Image (cartoon, rainbow, N blue to C red):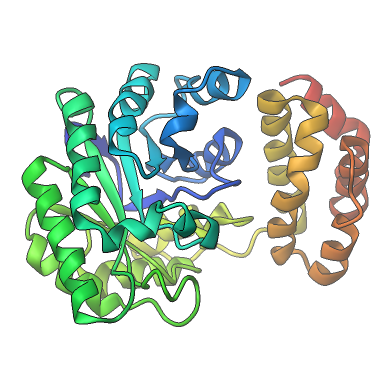
Length: 338
């Protein structure tokens, strides 16, 4: 059991926030496979405050989606407090602040990982969120180990994390790559070990190079972090949570999911997307999602090419039938019944 503020998390294998992926359908599938905690895909502080259908969808937190965190990103400290309060009132259990995104479009707008080079602004954001929701919701951070490998960058990292602890942050997720690295090169797990040693009893989650269940269990053992947030390793592979639980219990890793198991879970994911977005939009969204699932298919390359031709819900249901043996009619009925 891990405690983040007053929120209990049953075990250390957590679903990370991923833009375009960790929506409610993905979180439900991950939870069904054993994920103990999930983080919604990152949202801009200003977007939370704008009225619209998308906002209403974001603010709908169903009873089966707990514990769950909302992850905020932006550049204007004054907007973070009202946005955090709105998400807290909607029912999110934790408010997470993103200081780690390395995407160029994010950095150009002085958001995400850019703020690791601006400790004063970063800590102003932390204080705004703590002031707005800290009395009733835990606040957490997502960070990379710095902008780059310079001494100045590392100094900025520790300035932010130590200031955040003093302000009342309940946990910090640390990705072992720099912002400059993006997703290239190895994640420095040795840095995670150093951070955990400095943190002591404070909760630290690790991230980076967690592509298999063995990776996740090894990170816990090698770094001493309290938990791992699984990102790319869970895309199209929700079974990674089941496998982590087995390995951490000293059991043999379960066998690779059969083609039938893959098809059933992918069809369930599609049904959840239909319920959440409507059938036509779900069909389009499932193209990028199913390409990730295709990595486990015995004919993954051919399937990936075929999925690129999918344009509609009818196309997607036909692909389920052809490649997984899930009849189009059954998939459509599953979608209609959600």
